[in-house]
Length: 285
Image 1 (cartoon, rainbow, N blue to C red):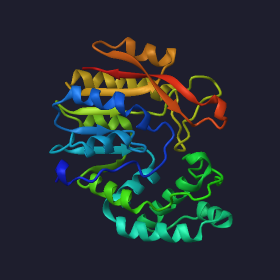
Image 2: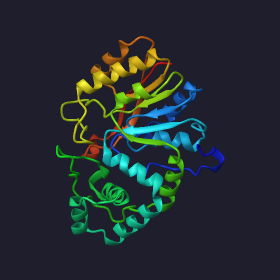
Image 3: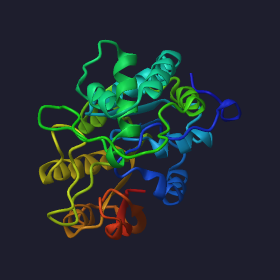
Image 4: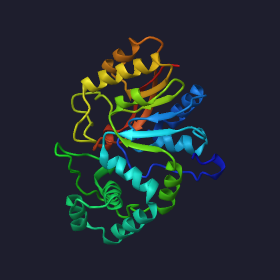
């Protein structure tokens, strides 16, 4: 059951996420509104969920099913723990906060907890205390980011976790490839794709949010999925980097609009390399 807007506390992403969409909400939300009405909402690369939380807080997803997914099982486990067992999760995060330190951080990073809540608390703790808030895994699927230098990291934001739990109530949270949306979405649905961005240079790539990565063949497959959804009367909005490769993929599709917007990105380790960069928004409506 969807929670009505007037009963919905405002929630923000509970994880820092490379390429998070907080910077683009003023561009994204009006485009979602322009796509209404739609009968279901899909977000196959949920990441930090900035757009979802904004839409839920504004009541724009009331009364329709919501499907959030990703191939990163650690991420989706964390979402399920926030939705289903937020009290236990908060207790565990309080313990992490009390014990936080260098030795403790690396011990937690190396650990493989048994329960869903313990694994989710580990991910949130590492995410809030690791270098630059990155979520990065090596080829073996192991979290490999060193500890960051924070004086007082926000390890347990109880109020926001409870708000996020309420926002996620009733949402479908699955670990699955993005192309699964072809089997799930029906005519009249809306899909927002926020894939790992195509690198703007050979040294700018950051696609290791999971052990599988996301390369040009994946980007081509995604464009094929966007085209197929459009043929099925399903509205699609997609964000990606502004590169000739990405433009060529989508400008060649029928009935698709490619627009340029600007966002501030802070993933680069050098402060002088951060700032507003152009990105593309693709829509078929």
